[in-house]
Amino acid sequence: MIRLSNPLGTMIQMPLRALRLSAAHSNAVAEPFICLPCRYRRALSIAAQAAKPQSTAPLRTSRLRKASTLSSVTTVNASKQILPAARDLYEALGVLKEEAGVYTSLIQLQLALKGLESQNAVTKVALIGANGLDGVKRLARVLLADPLAPESEWEKRLVAAEHADERAVLLRYEDNDSYDGRHPLLRQLGIPAPVLRRNNLEILVQAISPTTSTNTDVHALLTPNLELAPSPTARYAVVTNAMHKALVYSEGLQNLPVYTPVIEAEGAEKEMVKGAINIRDSGPHVPEEASPIVQINIERAEAALQTIRNSLDNSIDYEQLWFSSGLPALSSWLQEGTASDQSAIKPTVQRLIESLLSITDARIRTAETEHLQRLASTAITPTTRSNLSALLAQWSENAHTELRDQLDVTFDSPSWRKLAWWKLPWRVDDVAMIAADVLQRSFLTRAEKELAWLVGRIEQAGLYVPPVPKPTVEKDTTEGEIPPTRQSALITP
Picture 1 (cartoon, rainbow, N blue to C red):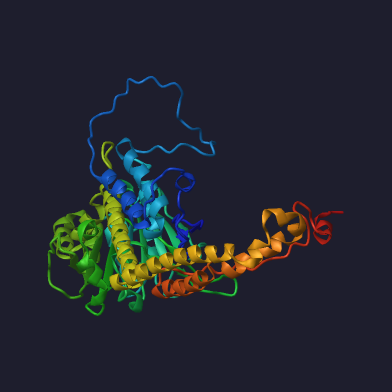
Picture 2: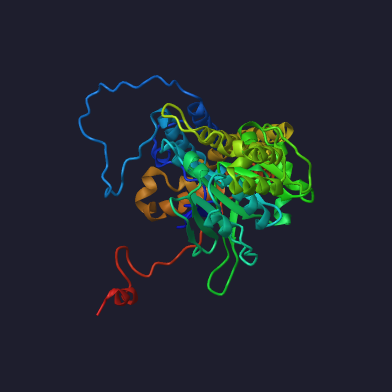
C-alpha cells in the first residue's frame, strides 16, 4: 500500500504485496515448523482473544515513574497513547498485520488501530447514493441541519445543482463554513453542524454506478472507492476509504439489488450498514429502527425543517412531519455507538474490529480449503505408493547383490592382479588408470541404469519435481574488482 496525502488520510489501492514473514521466525534456530495456515489461524486467534471485552477495574497509579513518557510536539517518533483497556488488542492486531496481512483488509486494520490510539476517535460514515449525488446530498442536509438555526451557507452549497461535478463530498465539523474543491477526488465542506461536533463524525457523500451497485457486498460498502478518471495530466487511480458505517440510499424501487448486502449482513456488520428508500407521495410512516431498510420521505423532512425555521410556533407541525418522514430512525442509527468511554473501546471501533476478524477468518478458511484441495489433487494413491516402495526395496536388494558379486569378479580379474604389491614399483603410473577402469566397468553399472528408470517412475507419480537449472554467468573480473568500463562511469570530473 502507498499512502496518498488527501483529506481522508486513505491509501491508494495497489496489488497486495506478498506476505512478509517475520525476521525472527526466519532466523530462529530451534523453532518447530508450523505450516502457513496454522500460523495465520494462530495470529487470528490471538487477535480474537484480545478483542473480547476485558475487565474495567481501575489501574493502580501508585507506581513510581522513573522517567516521563510524554512527547513534545516536535518529537519525530512520538509514543502512541493507546487506551489502557485496548493495549493487548492493539498488539494482537499488530501481530495479525504482520503474520496474515495478505488475508485481511489493511485499510480497515489501519482505521481500527487509529481508533484504539484515541479516546474519542473520529467515526467515519459513508452515505452512498445509487441514483447519483442529488438525492443523497439532500438526505445529508436534512440529517445534519440544525432546525433551530436559519439556513446556512453550507446547506445551499451542498444541494447546489452542480450536475457536472460528480466528485464525492466530505463533510467535517468546523466552527465556520468552509469549502475546499482543490482535491481531484472530492470536495471538502467544513460545516458547524452540532451533530458532527457532538458525535465526532465525518460524513462521506458519494454515488455509485448501477453496474457497481449490483455487484457489491458488505465489505465493499464499508470500503468505498473514489475513482480518478484518466486525463492528459493524471493517470487512472483508485482511492479506498475505510468506514465505520455505510448507508445506501435509492430513489424509488428501481435499484433493489443494491440492498442485498444490507439484508444479508450478519453479526457486527448488521449494525454497520443500513438502507434507505425514498418513496415520494407516500403516506405517514414510522419505520422500526431495527429494520435493515428504512422507508423515508425526504420531501416531508424538508417541509418539516422549513416549517420550524419559519416560526417556533409550528413545533407541533414540525414534530408530525419529521416523525412521519422516517428520518428519526436514520438519525438514531447515525449517532448510535459514537459515545466515548475511558474504560471501554468505542462501540463503532469494536464492531469494525469484529467485522475485520470475521472477514479475515473467512479468507483464511477459504485459503486453507484450497490448499488442502491442491494437496489432495497432487497426492498419490496408496496403490501407487506401495508399488513404488516395492520397486525401491527390490532395487536396493539387487544393488547389494550386484555389488557383492561384481567385487568378487573384479578382484579376480587380470587387470586388478597387475596391481600386486610387489609389482607396484613398475606399475605406479598405471594405478589411477586401472582403478578408474575397474570402477567404470564393474561398480554398480546395472544398478545405476535401474535407478534412472526408478526415478522416472517417482517423477511420473508426482513425488519429485526436477530443479530448473540456473543460467551461468561468466565473470569478466575477479571478485572485489570493478571492470574498467564501470570504473570510468564511477569517476566524476
